[in-house]
Each structure stands twice: as structure tokens, then as C-alpha cells.
Amino acid sequence: MTAQESTVAAQASSTSAQKSAGLNGRAMVEFRGVSKVYQTGHPAVDNLNLSIETGKITVFVGPSGCGKTTSLRMINRMVEPTSGIITVGGRDVSSIPAPELRRSMGYVMQQAGLLPHRTVLDNVSTVLRLNKVPRAQARKRSLELLETVGLSASMARRYPNQLSGGQQQRVGVARALAADPPVLLMDEPFSAVDPVVRAELQQELLRLQRELAKTIIFVTHDIDEATVLGDTLAVFASGGRVAQYAPPEEILRAPIDDFVAGFVGRDRGFRRLSFSPGDSLPIHPVPTVLWGATLPNTAANPDDAEAGATPAATAGSEWVLAVDAHNRPQGWLLRGSHAASTPLELIPGGSLFRDGDPLRNALDAALSSPSGWGVAVDAEGKVTGVVKAAQVLAAIDAARESRY
Amino acid sequence: MQWFLANLEQVLNLTGYHLIQAVVPLVLSVLIAIPLAQLARLNKVAGGIILSLGSLLYTIPSLALFVILPSILGTKILDFSNIIVALTIYAVALLVRSTLDALNSVDDTIRQAATAMGYKPLQRFLGVDLPLSIPVLFAGLRVISVSNISLVTVGSLLGIPSLGFFFTDGLQRNFPTEIVVGIVGTLVLALLMDVVLVLVQKLLTPWLRTAKPMPALASDLHTAAVEA
Image (cartoon, rainbow over all chains, first blue to last red; front, side, top):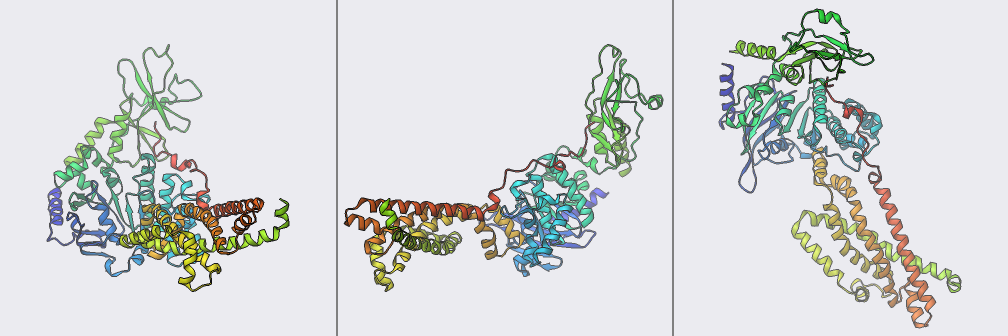
């Protein structure tokens, strides 16, 4: 039922007659019949109608060359639309002088786009100085912002070429936030950094957003990044039209057409588990041994072993979880029948299922664990028990059955 | 050497004149070439005209220009301003092209970033484009500075005082020492000017003196999930 309704709504939003599809909250940015046609005659953006909710992250996602960056740039008039109206906070952007409009919103781009001849502090101060804020005051505010984005004050005097890619992006975010704009435009800001730093920057952005509640419009071609960050996704298709405009969970569950289904990819079923809470999953006790100073011949935690849940007793061998002194998982040990003669070897473990994580992490923990048991930990990283893939699947089934 | 020491006062005097005739056109040419180059960058038609005119002007022989200018400007033939105007023309002709290269060397994404921050066009040109084009701009300036120093000597054929006086005077008196002093003096002057330009460039581009990127901070290396 829900799926049908959303399908209808999404279809309506992609037809030309439809006025901007209203969401629950009030709109900060609105596109009304916006098109951009370049001289070649091909529309880069074709009759875009979108209403972007205040205080949320809206992600423009799609393959390259489908008009998502062009659409973003029309908001701050880096690109002028051929037809249609864009409003920000109710004001038609074409009625505001471009430099003034741009200073009223933050802009973060790929490769950070920092001014290489200015120090980090001066880069962050840029918009404040353009707005004629006194130098001392601008610097004070900029120093605060460096801290907000997780950079130490010692970075302030450095030049951008002395920073790593991730640090540069943080400075880019600080600079965009400096004038405390209500709207933040982010154009593939994390696409040039390595996956580990990227994941870290994504989490930082979500943390900042919880504090600041800006209206963020974020462009990416990465559906994973889009589902992690977005409150709402606008999936752009070739020809500059929006194929689907919905929360990520809905797009993964009910892609509106073959294009969206193809774009969200083969793993969409697995990816959607990111939106299924994992708190109802049964956590089983697990035998543990202290790994480190002493040889792990005996279970250091007899209570757990006595609890009866011997995880995988196959062919005379059993898996035991090695932990450190703080009960944090270190890896798995296979206690075989001939273990007495051969020294035990620590087998690296899989990913962890943290308290509060969705089912996706639980399933991945189980699938990536050499023992077949996914290790569950609490917020401090201490072992709370293990989960089994079959039970995760059962939980997924239960969730699906309760939906229909 | 003895002759040099005996005539030190004259050498220094002429060096002073020489320097003025070389430096003033250099400064004027920078002030003229930068707006012209930006105009050439923004307008293809204007750019074509400016660049061809520059090449054309540079083909005029210097002696001819020194002789013609007084009748155009209404100055006396021995006026310094003839040399200064002539050398400015040559310098601008050369510098427009290298300034254009310099402005084109600025990364377009940085330009766009500045525009997106809300820089107005002139603000951006002075605050972003120009400072970032300094390295390439100064490479051009250094060539012109040397060329100016040597061109100034031609003025001595008309009797305008510079180190070139030692060439004409030495030749007439068949006195090689004087000619050598003139040549060495010109070379030293050209070298000193070059050193000064290099120093000025370093002063103006502190961001290029910084070391290679620092190793990433722990926060960057820190992985979200500890593998277990």
C-alpha cells in the first residue's frame, strides 16, 4: 500500500504539470519549472520541480552528466537557468545580486577549492571578510569553526598545500559554515578523498548536521554516500530529469522505474538493511579467552562457557573469541582436537555489530566472521555476545512480513 | 681597474641614469599590461588585436623608435622620456603575452571557488587571480628586465646618458678598458635587477615556500571500526 502511494507521488512529481511536490516540512529551496539548455540544444536540466525541505539533507544523486551539479549551481547562480524560477527562503534568486546571494549560502566543492595563497585561517574567514566583518572578529570566529570541524588551532597558520586531502575538505566545510548560512551547497565534496577518510567525513557531516540543522543540498554520484547522508534523495536520470524524489529507504525498497532500479544497483536489498533497526536481534553469549600475556589454553571466562551456548562445535573443534583486558575483541581461536600439540593461532575477525547498528551491520558481521558468528559490541567496544546470520535473516523476514 | 676607480663617480652617475631608464618602463609596463591581458582574456577579439599589435610593436627597431618618438611626443631628442616611452612600449608588447599566460595558469576551480564564495569580479581579479599568477608573471618580468637594461644602452647613440656612454666614448677614443667597464657594469646591473626581482617574488608568494604536505593527523588515519 505504502509502496503504491509513493509510486504515484513520485510519478506525479516527474510529470511536467505537477507543481513542486510538497514534503512534510516547509521548503527552503524550491525549483519551479526550471530548465537549463546549453547551446548544443540538449537540455542539461529539464523542467525541474523540487521542493527542498528546511533543515534536512537533500541529496542529488545520479550518473555523471545528468544535470545534478548544474541544478545545484543554479541555486547560487553559478549557472543561470534558461527558464523557470528558483526561490531560496521564498525569494526569487534572480532578484538578488549574485555575489550577495552566494555569500548568503555556504559552498563546498570537490578538491575543497581552497585559495592556495591564503592561510587556513584566512580561507575560513573569506566570506566573513567579504561581508566586511572586522578582521579580528572574523579570525576569532574562524578559529572556533576549525575546532567545530575537528581541526586543531595549530593548523590555522598553514597553507592549504600543507594539509592532507581530508583536512582540506574539513577546512572547506569550515569556510562554508563561517558566515552561519542557512543553506549549504555541497558539490561532490568527498569524492576526491580515500574511502576511509570519506566515511569519516560523512560521519562528521552527520554529527555537524545534528548540531546545526542546516538545509544541505549535497551532490554525489555515489548511491552509498547518498543513502548514508540523505534525508531525501533526488535521483537524476539522463536528460536532466528527476526520476524519483523520496527518502532513501523508499528508493531502495521501491525504485520507481528500471532506471532507478539499475542505478541503485544489485545490492539495494542489502543496502536497505541500513534502515532496519537491529535492536530486536537475539544476542548469544560466547566463550572468550584473554589474549595476550598468558597462553590461551583455558577459558578465562568460565561463566560464559557454562552458559551452554558453545557456538560452533563442529568435528571436535570449537571457536573461542579472543579478547583483550578490556573485553574488546581481538580475533578468533579455533580449539581443535589436536590443539594440545599445535600452538593456537589468532584468526582475524570480521566486522563488528555495534549497539544501535542496523541489521545491515549485523548481517555483515556474521558473514565476515571466520566462525560464522558476528561479534556484537557495546558503545565502548566491549563484547556483549554474538549474532548468527540465520537469525538476522529471520529478523529481516519478520520485518518484511509485518510490513505487508 | 685604475681607470674604473678614477672615474668611479661618473660610473655611478651613469649607472643611476641607466637604472632609472630601465626600471621606470618596467613598472609602467606592469601597470599597463595587466589590464590589457585581462581584457584579452575576457574578450577573444580584443585579445587577438592586443597580441598582434604587441608583436608588431616589438619589430620596430629600437634606434628608429628613439628617433621617431620626439616628433610624436613633442619632446626634445635628448629627453629621458623618449627612452622611457620606447622601452615601455617594448616591455608592454612582451609582457601582455606573458601576463596572459600567467592569468591562464590560475586553476579554474580556484576561480570558481572564489566566485562561489561571493567575490565580485574586480575583487576576485585583485584578490585571487593576480596573486596566483605571480610566479608566471615574474618569469616574464625577469626576461623584460634584462632586455630593458641592454636596450637602454642604445640611447647613448643619441647622447642620452647611461652606461652605454662608455661604449660610444670608448669606441671613439679607441680605449677598450672603457668599453669593458661599460659591458661589465651593464651585466652587473642586469644581474642585480634579476636578484631583486627573485627576492620580491619570494616575498610576494609566501605560500610557495611552505614544505610538502604534512603527514596526515591521527584523526585522518583513525578508522571507524576496529577489526576484531
